[in-house]
Image (cartoon, rainbow, N blue to C red):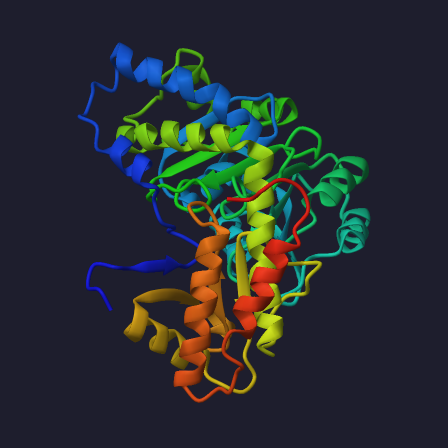
Length: 388
């Protein structure tokens, strides 16, 4: 193992492209000067296609969780009635934030590893007509589930007056989203996932309907007050000191996505998902999620005849390959592979090959090369344009 070679395949933070790293190494500039204004002015239009919106995308210095709290504190007030759809650890985080602000929080709990069914949401909305907000997670990072946000958005709009607020932290930039067409009122993401940046930048977009509610909401807030960010963004600025190095990097990330083509970015992520899942099937190892519910950005694997932790340890020791473990009650029971952002089918072939060796090392009998061959077949038999 080379001491400086680190193969990072967790669902965030993710590897950073060299050109993005170089962009972030630019000399610092004044955050209230013309250079910063011009930087934000260039970034603004390039973010909209990634979110699938005509609305501006607000830039807030903070982690993805800062974006989730921002979404809560701007859209609802103490004692308001809300629904949180929980399909894993990050849906549960929305519950904790809502409870912190004294909301009447209803929880629609779904077994971990499954996506919520639209009819479950519809049934709940019909029996709770006073909801002010419905909170959902697009990709549940802890399980690798991709929830049917498009269908849920339609149901929320048809069955209630509630705002539809979506955590897109581990999905936006890797999974297709059409915020405007899917009736999403607030969409949040973070920088350290499919956006290929270090943690520290959260991005939030709001529908016109959402802005109407936010402007009337009297809930106290200061740093996370979206109306301040909205007003300042009109002047290509931010109300507080921006994370300028991350904005340098973000501009380069958006350039890379633009050069690849946004639709091709989404196709690449689907390809990596299919390659990974086919490889795991070929090795005879159970997956936590069904093919229908699976996310294009992270795959969760639930072995039944070997220790997930032993495998993680083996590939870390031999190859410095870092995989993610399970969270909460899935700790020690699953391992997760992140395939988002600066990741390609070539990387998938690499980590599948390393997984096969790790499995052999811990005593799991697998036909060496079977997983790699399955992934290769998916790639070779793909439809559409060449995927790099």
